[in-house]
Image (cartoon, rainbow, N blue to C red; front, side, top):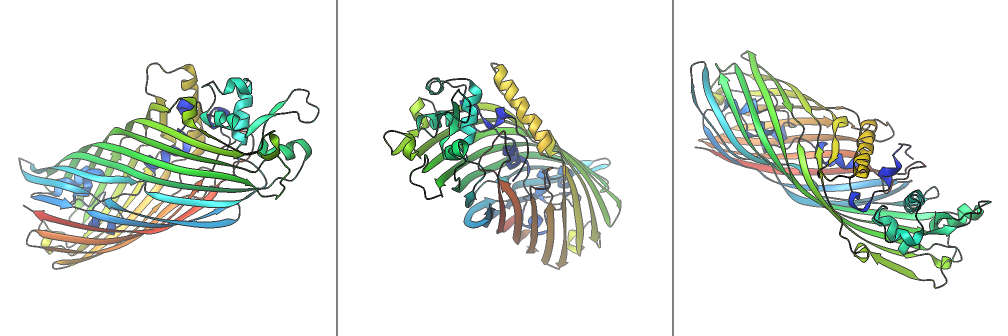
Length: 519
């Protein structure tokens, strides 16, 4: 159980605010570094290394090491196996998809005066890959997903008949009223009827048996593909400064199915099952800026510092849903009732803004046999420490016609984000050994939990290795990255009791090949 307090306004969204929840921000900001195969092989640690097109997205000063032109392509393939534990029950699911590492063109040319060279890059990479499948199931004797709709209806102050025609309550609540998943009932000594979940009616009225089989399947697809242009300058091969401007393109789709079934085996109560299928999409664009510097205080040492501005996204969401409910003896004509979001004549679409966190990075590298001619270099060891300000994620209304309710909603979401998350450190380390034209590489990365609450177990760990070949202006790199990731998933949110959640664990790999040519 998790006792994070969420504002009632967040749990019960109006039809136009169906999707923006505090946990949504993580898919835009809690992602590992994705570069070329070479950079992925060394754990993504390249904040002080330079000499790779991936620097465009990590520390743009690193492209200042280029004095010739390279064309790079980095296709990849991911596969995942997800395991989950929900209220003591284990489940699993698998997924796979193609991926894109950093690709593009980077070129350097001779400078003038102390600025001995300059470089520019045009690059594209997949900064987030949303393709995944999660499934969990278990028994619950504590809460029902239908309680969120009963609470929303009660808080509205409207009769059930009026709720059906009101967009001041969530679409889910209207569907729950339509299907009799929630209804009015007289409880205890209260002369006025309460709005209750029929899944919990026996327990609320008589203290009767209450046990539900719950299951939740989630399939997501899409990603964030970022296109960027970078520029850097090199002063005396000692100081490198650079910047890049990025445009992330967001495409996201989530299909989920949540089901509750009466597990008591009692055919004479007031609930058999409810089944909710939802489809949510998000699309849009963002802009960001990255600045960095690399210095060489000694021939063998490189030090780097980079700062990434928040990405400012402009997004549009759509939401559709279908609900099926059987409430057994609560109706005079028992049977299954079905309803679609289209029943209410609406396909919710909403435009809003989101900014991701700041990122600050310190890096260091030790180069074996540092010389200007890279053919004589023997390898390197490099490491990055990154700090991400997850508490500065922010939603806000895009339209100048935003209502006071919209503004209050986003204030509530942002307040919860500040309470829910914390700043987190990420660590990356890697190295390379060079044998004439062949290179071997190893790397490790650890992304710490963004959650304040210690009960929420979230972290990401990546172990990587690869081989490289360089000769006569051609290079090829092959890398395997194995990831072990832990996170949590909430099937629903309640305002007045502990929120139950599933612990998820993902194991999987990413195989990437980078090929390039010097021209």
